[in-house]
Each structure stands twice: as C-alpha cells, then as structure tokens.
Image 1 (cartoon, rainbow, N blue to C red):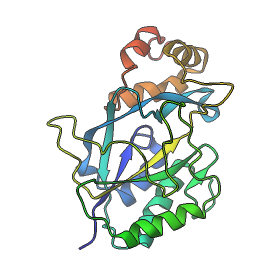
Image 2 (image 1 turned 180 degrees about the horizontal axis):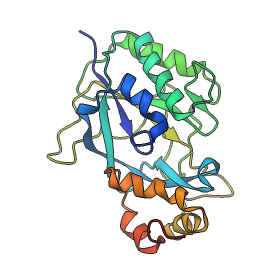
Image 3 (image 1 turned 90 degrees about the vertical axis):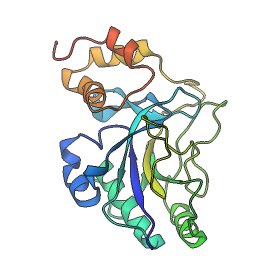
Amino acid sequence: MPLTAGVLIIGSLLWDESRQAWRNARLDMTTVKNVTAPIRYGRLSSSRGNTYTMVFSRLCQTGHAKAIRCSRGVSTGADLIAEAEALWKAEQSDAPAGRIAAGWGCVALLCHPERKVPKSLLGAWADRVAREPNYGQVSQTQTEGRLIGDDGLLKIDWPRLVEGGAPVDVDLLLVTANDPRINASSLKYPDVGMITNAWNAAANKNAEYFWRNTENGIRTFQDDEIRALLRPRGQG
C-alpha cells in the first residue's frame, strides 16, 4: 500500500493566491488540520518589504500550523521527490525545475515515529538532498543545534492535533524551512519590537503576512505582543 503523505504549512503557502494552482493540484484541502509546531517570526525577507516571515525554532514555544494531506500516495522515492519539487516550485515560482532548495531555505521531511517507512524510500530521499546545491542551510541558535540533518530529516517533534493531541495521521510530512540567518553578527532571533517596527515601517500590504496568518489559524507565541504594537490593519 502507498504511504500517506502531507505538507506541514507555517505561512503563506496556505493562503497566498499565487499558490492556489499548487494547492488544487497537489493537496486535499478537505483534510486541513490545526497542529502543533515550534514556530516564530524570524527571517527578514526582502521580497516582503524587509519584514519578517515564519521560521522553525527548536526551543521556542509551540504554535499552531496546518497539516494537509497530499492528493496522491507515495510508493517510491521518486513519488516523494516529485511532491517535494512541486512544493518548492510553489515556494519559489522562478526556481529552475527540479529544485528543492536555495540559499534561504529548503524542503525537509518528517516521518511519523510510529509508522514503518521503507529504508529504500529514506535512502532515496537522502541521496536526493545530497545532490541539491545549498541544501540544509537553515541556521539555529547555538543552544538549539542543527535543524535539518544530512539525511534531509527535520529535527522537530512530530506534530499533534491542537484539539485532542493525537499525532497527525499521515506517514510522512514535507515542509519548507526558511533560514533565519543566525550567525556571528546576529546571534539570536529578532524580538517583537524589531518585528513590529519592520511591519510598521513598510507598506500596509507587507503586514498582511501577519494578519492573513492569524486569520487562517497559523499562530505563534508572539502574536498577542505583536498585535499590541502593530499598526491597526489597513491604517497607513
């Protein structure tokens, strides 16, 4: 039997109109679930007016993300890789065909800890990420350790349903992870003041990233503080 796969979404892949064709083609949107994930605003994005987008942070408080089942099952490594390549194309529409990473992020894999995933499939995935330029360059703070292994697996807990706490009921989850650029010149994540100052200084459309996330149920531990400091929606 094919394995069941899904996508763990932590931002605009869920609601951005430019990703609608990918959602229609690849996801069963009737299966959307609210799930746990360690997420925060942390990557300064030039494409969003130098404001902050969502990242994984292994030691931060759990927030709410979305898990959505893929329309197709996964029987082989090639099936999994095809889903990952389609996901990356949705993330970066101008990326060359067949890519799963860039310098600012990549597609990674989560495996249900209580399901048997064939070694051949995991081996095919590890071989694929090993051939990808710039793969796995997603920094974390020193205390958090590495987020993505050489095998292309994301090192976070398997997501659970927000209501009831049951593990997400798929065998595999693909996810895009963005690099917050933790480095010698920036040793920690931006605080809420930096995040809201960036949105308040930018065009109104850029703060829509925050508002659209929250209205679609993508939440972080920072949201209440952000909302208190952020210019009211639509006010310039």
